[in-house]
Amino acid sequence: MRLIMTKRWIHEVSREWLNARKDVLTASDIVKMLPEYKRHLKKPGDPSPGFIALAYEKLSNREPDTTSNGAAARGHIMEPYAIEEWNMWWTGKQVHHWDDIIIKRNGLGFSPDGLDIPQMQNMGVSLGWSEKNKCLVCQNTTFAPPKYALEVKCYEPKQHAKAILTDPREADERWQVAVAFMVLPSLENAYVMWYCPDSPVPMAYNNYTRADLNDEIKIITDMVKLFHESMKYVKGIIQKVNGKETCQFTEEEIYKEFLETQSEHFISI
Image (tube, rainbow, N blue to C red; front, side, top):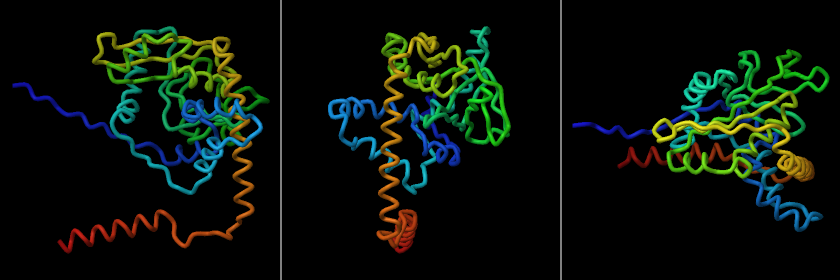
């Protein structure tokens, strides 16, 4: 009799990396905020409630949740395997796996899955782009400018099939690639790889150039302006409050006390 193991995917990411993402607009933010951006176009003079809400979230003191489960965890865990497969089958574009690091430029942040240069230990969790030297930089240490980027998507078979059949010009993943081009002026090509080992067609990819994503880059440029305006607006509110409306308790303190009461409840039972 064959036993079928139930997969319970769990992955832990760097808390420092999550915190480093809080002062920039990321590709994940952009995909979520596209409907709000389209609503704002109808009333461009008004503040955008959605972008202001995003600024509140970015500027909050809440500690990020470092644990992912299910599909999100599965995707993270599979990334290095996908890149190993990529390097085996598409030898002309060798890439190195990158994890828990963000590259920032002009208010945008990009967390690569794979680049044609290796991730170094002394890069920390955050890199910038040197406009003067045209290369990556961290604390006065410079690194080679990447030419190729790889975005890996490890969907379940059903979503994997839909993704590889979607026109590259309409794929949601193109927004992440557009951000990569904006953050890294040195990029010549960016690839999206779909990887699902159990699928009848386990691997596929799209190739993008900067010119392919001109429309998306224009939209993201507008969204970055909205993000900067919203962050400035919320920081102004924070300065006005300036401790006048400070809570007695933090959420962490409340949660800790809640756990203690729950523990006491189970002990008494």
